[in-house]
Amino acid sequence: MSSLDLQLRDQAIQALNCGDLIAYPTEAVWGLGCDPFNRLAVDKLLSLKGRSVDKGLILVAADLDQCERITRHLPSELFNRLQTNCQPTAVIQRATTWLVPSNDSIPVWITGQFDTVAIRVSSHPIVAELCQAFGGMIVSTSANPQGKAAATNQHQAERYFSNRVRVYVEGDLGGQQQTSELRHLVTNEVLR
Image (cartoon, rainbow, N blue to C red; front, side, top):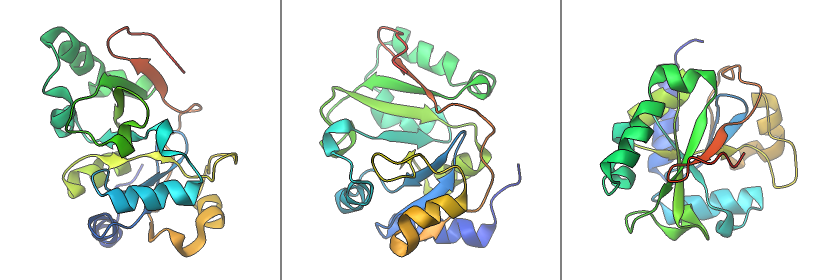
């Protein structure tokens, strides 16, 4: 997998900083993203997908350090579990999205109706590079309107959203056949 074109990366980061939406390849499907702490951007994303805010959203990061505002309140046992499972060698086998107990630093438009926040440290080089360049986590939800199949290539994402997404980040999927596993950090239960 090649790294991200610098001009395209800069356009994507500018879009995120301006409250616009981006579409990009992830481990298994194309993702739709925005700045998770910009309420207007998240509202725009939810409206575009036809998705209820109650469902919550996944946040992706380049590394666990970018998730510090979510993990800083965790007991050491839970943080260690998360840290062990977010090592690059652990993530490559199958991406895992962790449901972490939420705290008051995470807005309700991200958590939805849940008392957890969904985070994933991505091993996909484009996702990681976008998060590093942005300086933090970004929203990652499948690039499709509610009820439609998730986009598996840029062309399909563009057909769904056309010019309503500011930047389409070119690149290949990560080669995984399934979307990320969904696992609860406290119970270690697999939910998907």
